[in-house]
Image (cartoon, rainbow, N blue to C red; front, top):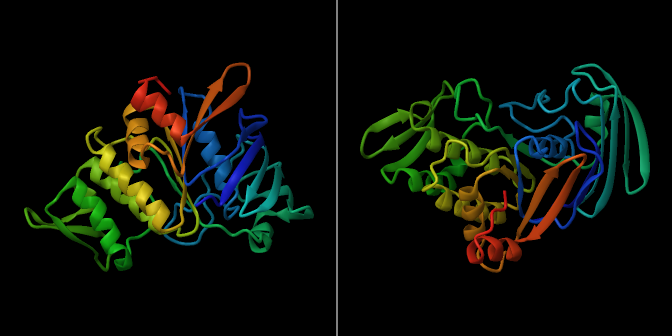
Length: 301
């Protein structure tokens, strides 16, 4: 599912005129540290609900990616076939900003972000997962587990612990895993990898028909668990019409994604960010990624 077919970041943090064409269901953002991978996710979060990525348990505006560190943002994208051009100037948390937005050439200007949120016609759900979601479990805001997700979440968690046979939410909002081996245990007390997988699982299932943004997908997940995790991720993105953008600097993660998608590479695109005097992007099809990793063993990081 390609909600965003292509996008260009005209100006955001250190990114200037960076284009991403031919976006697919699963999009790998690769490159060295400080190449701008996280900034791409932050910019993409503005194209959903312009409040930013949905990282809260409620509908309150997310206060993360947009900050005084990025006083001007310019993004253009083809979203669900509509050309969207967005510019935000003098941005400050909770304050006034000058905003210009056009959709298919229809332009409007508003004085405050909240007015734009109400008027914006492309209200695409977005979920963002940080690299440290498995730390400070109670403080990290992730979508609250819903019983309707039971089957899909269990399919994921049992890849990490085959003894888990159900997940449930207490009235206090604490999520428990029920295990045939150790009984009931709060998910906050289990291993980092399982917590990270659960957080990503809930994030994906909370945005059907939307965007999932994962920063450092490999963080906290053991290399041996990455293949089955990425298989689940690819399967669920297709099942729930979710488009994912994932950053990584790990060959294990790249290989896991490539293997999950398969030799034909259908639904996969890779983008390597290279930051020198300016940032440039090289796109690789899913098929080309498979050839370069599985057949040639080239380092794509």
